[in-house]
Structures are given as C-alpha cells and as structure tokens.
Length: 472
Image 1 (tube, rainbow, N blue to C red):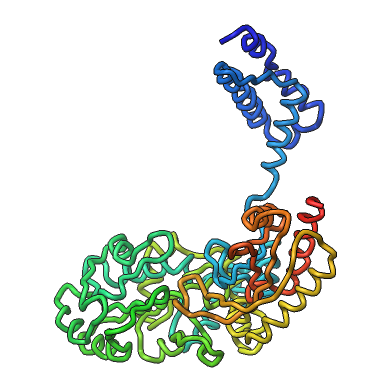
Image 2 (cartoon, rainbow, N blue to C red; image 1 turned 45 degrees about the vertical axis):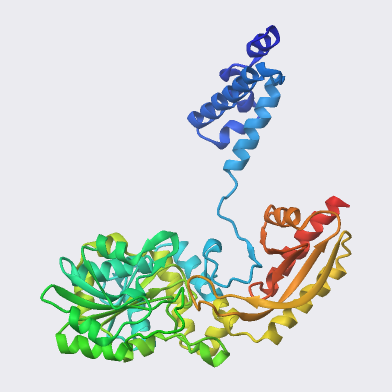
C-alpha cells in the first residue's frame, strides 16, 4: 500500500458524520436508524476495499462526504422502489410463468381491491351470525360450473395433488402410468410430490403405451387409488396408447378404489371450437365419474394462483379434514379474485371477453391483426427516428404447461433499430418504467399482438419514444 492510499483511507468519513449529514437532508426519516447505520457502514467499507484493491495500479481516491451521502440516498431510493412490477408481455406466450401467468379480469381486480381494503365476511356467516367457512364463498360456483358434488381450493395445483394424495392414499400405493409421470415448473416431479405425500408410486405400462390390464394387474392390498395425470405440458406422438378416463373409472369401481385425475391446467370451455387443440374440460372429466379432480386457477381458467380440488363429497370431506389443509389454504385476496373469475363463467360470452387468457386463446388471426395495425399507426405517427416499423405474421403459444405443441397464428409488430443493436434495444425495453418484454429475431424486436392489450399501447409508444428521443 502506498502513501496515497494511506491518505485516502484516512480521509474516509466517519459513520457518525455520514448519518448526521443524511439526517440534516431528511433522508434518515425514510428508513429505520439501524438500517441507515448499516447502509453507511457497508458503503464506507466498500470504498475502503476499493482503495486497498487499487494497490495494483488502479487509483481509487476517497470520495467526499457529500458524494457518499448521495450514494446512500440512491440506495434508499432503490429500497423504496417496488421490485414486483407490471410489465407488458409482448412475447406471444399467453400463460408466461415468468411473467405471472394469467392476468386478472376487471371483475376479479375489483373484488380483490374491495376485499383487500377493509374487513370481510371471510369466515363469518352473515345469515346466522356465526363462524363460517371460507370455502363456502366459491363452493357453489364451482359445483354449478363443473357438476362436481363438492369443492375445495388451496394455494396451487401441486398443493392440491399433495393434499389429495396424502388424504386418500397415505401409507399405501397409487397406480400411475409411466407415460404420465410429468415434471412441472421448477423441477417439481410427480413422483417426488407423491413421496412427500406419504404415498408409494406404482408405475405401470411403458413411456408410450399403457393398457387397462396394466392397471388391473398392479392392484394389490396396498393399493389406495388409481391416478391419471393429464400431460398438459408435453405430448407423446407416434406408437402410443393410453387408457380412456371412463375405463379407468370403471376399473376403480370394480376394485373399490378412488380415481384421482390431475388435469394440470384445467379448462372450463371447449377450446377446439376456436381452432385450438382438444383439451378435456373439467365438466367432462367430472361427468366421466372421476372421484377427485385437481387443476390450477391461474392457467386456462384465467384466475389467480390456486389449486382447485373437485369431486365426490365423501372424499372431499376427508381431504378437508386433513391438517395439511390449513397449511395450504388460500387467503382472502386469492379467494376474492377467484370468485370474481368464476362469476364471469356464468356467461361464457362474458368470460371470453373479460378474461385475457381466454380472449388471447380464442381470438381469430384477423382480430389480432387489426390490433397490430392500430399499434403500427400509433408508432409511425409518433415521429421516432432511428427505428423502422412493420407488421408480419407469426405464431404464439399457450405456455404455462398448456396446449403443448400448439402453434397459434398471430400478428407481430416488428421493430428494426438503425442506431443500436436489437439486443441493446431489447435490454433498453426491459429497463423502462413499465418494462416491455419482447423477443428477438435477428436484427428485429418482435411485439406479439396476441398478448398485448390495446390499453397497453401507451406504454409501448411512450417507452419507445423515450428510448429513441434520448438517442436522437
């Protein structure tokens, strides 16, 4: 260490001096005093280490007292900035797990806001004036919409599967086709969920072919249930065979075993009517006689994250009594948003209009193209230099472990920057106040109109203007 470094180390301000300056500037009122002291200590120490590291030739002079105070003020500003932020999903992946999956409908947002802003009858029976059950608020809607005898909601579908397995098969075996042992997001695998539920896995069949006799031959005194898992996040094609749900239900009746069907995404409308690939609806699965059905709330249903369990009343009562149920239950905000979502399904046309997931999945290519042309006109009218705009065709995807392999026709607004690279523009779009998440194709940035709502155009136009006006 040379003399200059020793001098700079001596010139580093004391922590008390920094705190006094920040208090005088009013910055200290924005955080607890112990936190402010720690920020001051860490900032000074970082500069100390920088000066010491400069012994290899890089000079790192000691900053002024005001300079360090400004640095700490910026850190406090960042602490007050929300990390969880709204973004524009222009990727074309409708149920983008990294971007929060299903956006809530206006009705669901209104329910959430109303319940979140005050007290509610979450577990209070307004008619009797006694304690009630939180599930009563959505149980009737779920029964009417699906035909199920009873319903329960927990915090996600993995929890729903875990709770159902633990309640109905703990200490015994569950028979599952090898071709249905899926892995869901975050490396959660069905065999591992079963193990945590206290259930032993009995695999039957092969990866591509499983027959009814495979299930029948696997049944033994340790068998507690038969399980069917909808492969909603992948497809096996070619030389394949699987057991129809009705046949498995019939075997369950014959062997006096319940049948659990994990639908994964879950869907309440016929998507094939809109040109999408066939997806079993919850109502169809319940009508087939399935004893217990589980699915997600924030995928094809278009609501908040939740795990929905439907089925026979006797079995649902066993699941509800499980102590794990309390650990996995939903809160009042999820409940409010889910109720608002389910009410929309009472009018299927309203559901298609209000739920962004359903709208994005069922819109025609022409409807999406019209929205793309509107955005294109607004962008060209904004007078930006340094970027060219055009409209072209492409394909979107359902995402979120839904409709695997389905290519959905879409329209793409293309941005071709002249003054910076496409990767740099993509980075700048992510850095906006309301980030725009797009995709790169060579020299172009593509904004997929199937996942962009018209009310989000203002974020795109203003964001791009801020970028190219700065560059200009």
